[in-house]
Image (tube, rainbow, N blue to C red; front, side, top):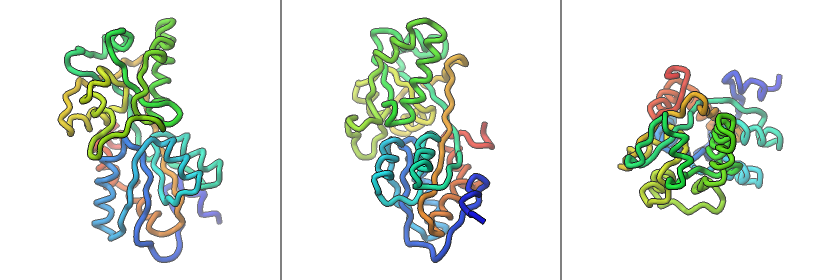
Length: 263
């Protein structure tokens, strides 16, 4: 029996004694939730989680280059699937969901109804993440494609004006203790941003006042987050199962992610 077959069913194979710690690579949008999950996991098991957070595409590239990582939680399914293709992991499981929202400084007067007009306005600095390197950018480009279907030329104009401020290999370094998107608002680099809805919650925690609105139905974009188990030890399996457990899912829901219980 090939034990790797059963990851999607929530069963993980492992052998030997649990290691002293687990190395976790996680999407930047998961920083708050995964930090809390890691703390709870360590409190219960004594196993230390060494977390590193950043754009999923850049983290995936580091794994492919040989960096030692036990668990990878991505903001999409594609980057973990590429690790399957390269033989780094046997399979991938979707463990939580998210959505894209629009957010802006209060003076912009952003609503779901005027969102597209505001985004197209030449007076508005529209921030996005970086496609290919960061799934948030890929999801945003899908929104722009939907805008093109609604109004000829709109998607092309949005892609041309979008400021790819975060999530890329050349993006500005974010000060320690700050989140990327709130930082871009606080420093005046963006008036409006398309990002994960959970980002708006992070902004409020950092004292950045934003209007966060849902995308209208014609532009709505969901995000599926994938997990890939790379380490073959018991500790890695325990952490993966903890994330999938009721306790782990409750923490993710608390941070605004979409779990089976809060859809």
